[in-house]
Amino acid sequence: MFPTRIEIIPSEGIVERVAAAVAPSTPITVTCLPHHGVGRTVRTATQLAGLGYTAIPHLAARSVQSRAELTGILRNCSDAGIGEVFVIGGDRKHPAGPYDSALPLLEDIEQYSSGLIRAGIAGYPEGHPFLDPGAGVDALLAKQHLASHVVTQMCFSAPRILDYVGLLRRVGVQLPVWAGVAGAVPRTRLVSLAAQIGVGSSLKFLSRKGPLARKLLVGDHYAPESLIAELKSQSARLAGIHLYSFNSLDPTPSGTDHGSDIKGASRAN
Ligand SMILES: NC(=O)C1=CN([C@@H]2O[C@H](COP(=O)(O)OP(=O)(O)OC[C@H]3O[C@@H](n4cnc5c(N)ncnc54)[C@H](O)[C@@H]3O)[C@@H](O)[C@H]2O)C=CC1
Ligand SMILES: Nc1nc(=O)c2c([nH]1)NC[C@@H]1CN(c3ccc(C(=O)N[C@@H](CCC(=O)O)C(=O)O)cc3)CN21
Image 1 (cartoon, rainbow, N blue to C red):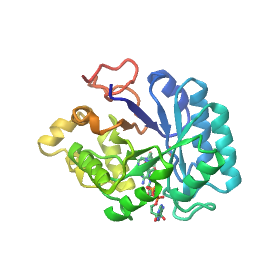
Image 2 (cartoon, rainbow, N blue to C red):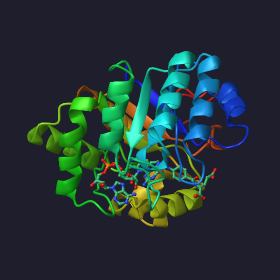
Image 3 (tube, helix red, strand yellow):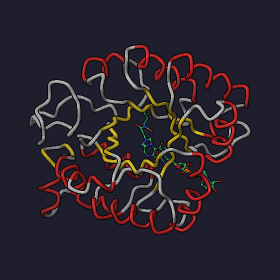
Image 4 (cartoon, rainbow, N blue to C red):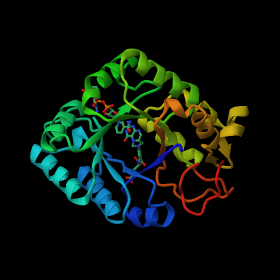
């Protein structure tokens, strides 16, 4: 068994689309974007939880406006049976409230939920636009005692993800690692999203040239199956696949699926 989770953006109508396309056994994580705010993420997650999904809201520290807002969020999560969140600093230029990065938010979540809510944190196999690789690992070492697992930033190379897991183990980060993989997203959308979130060099194949492009692109879509198969072959080193769907939940025209539990799609393996 190699588990898969699917990340969605909380856009209009997405709950209905998930219900139509994704098996209820697949956990769904809900992005928190700066222009949406945290409320929209938490509302979407509680709606999905009401439909029987394991729903995991992302809480971006810089988007939380106050400690009172945080306690309200935790109460809503608890009422909806949500036992896990994903905590990141967030892309807001200036914090909206008391939290400027993930660590202080993790500390308050631990305190206000009496340790009852698990939290995932982010890892960066290709580094981060404003964190050099060392600082990224230092941030993980500082946060790991408050976290249950790491989810990696979107990456297109199995060796890079696995090398990163090796690096984490060498420096003493022992948390389970979910490998962040893009879903069957249109190539042009992926190019602009990747530029926006600062994903780097493993992306060159998206230019459509060379043998890697033939392996990783099916028509106009990215095809994650071969990357997922490579990661699966090293499943002892990973907790599973975290699929960045960018709300592309339907099977692609070629009939390939996302290597996951999307209803009605043909299986990749
Ligand atoms: N990997 C993912 O799924 C997501 C990643 N992000 C990105 O990750 C960044 C870092 O978040 P974490 O990995 O949780 O690190 P973190 O919050 O633990 O921060 C690590 C270091 O970066 C600084 N920092 C954090 N956010 C910043 C920002 N927006 N501008 C300037 N400095 C910042 C912190 O002060 C700290 O020194 C976010 O700001 C955002 O760019 C945002 C949403 C989702
Ligand atoms: N730096 C960073 N920020 C993030 O928010 C983020 C990551 N990295 N890495 C993994 C995922 C990818 N994320 C993203 C990023 C952009 C969109 C996106 O579609 N943005 C649209 C707006 C969508 C909408 O408003 O509904 C855009 O045009 O900006 C979605 C998820 C969230 N996560």
